[in-house]
Image (cartoon, rainbow, N blue to C red; front, side, top):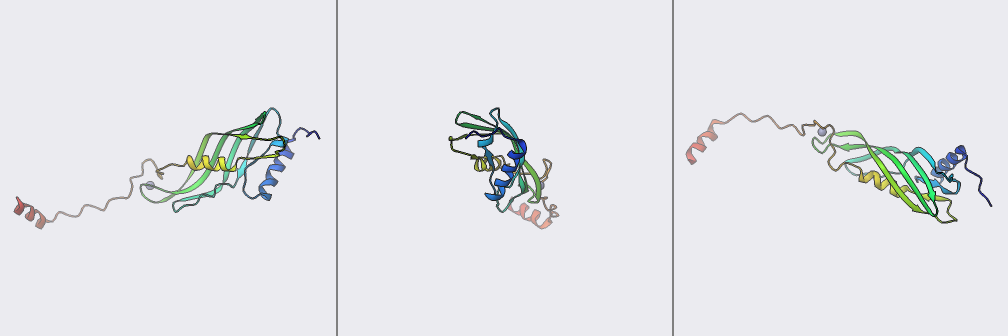
Length: 163
Ligand SMILES: [Zn+2]
């Protein structure tokens, strides 16, 4: 059976409904993908990477171009995810957005495949793009040092004795 060319609305309907049915996945509807490729944009809740100092919130926002070349599906574009991170200098929590500007994944698709699942690739790219030493502000002074204790004359006197 020949598959009709995709209609944008149908395309989106399918992507959205698959999200709901298959939990939190980022899927490309290859059975309906236009031969010249398609631009996809949306949000998918796929980054469940929680650590003591790392809390993602909201979904991954994506703007992708997906195109199939023979048995290869090429997906390229931009991903971004909001996080609450702890500052590596002062320890305070702050909100930031992690961007992946050059997300690229190539997926082998068979004749029978209706969907290509790029969830793991997208999640991994976001996690790899996270800063190793996040800072709340480039000018963050770090944990402020306690004021210098007042000089104690008695220690000075000891110093004098050692000499
Ligand atoms: Zn800080």
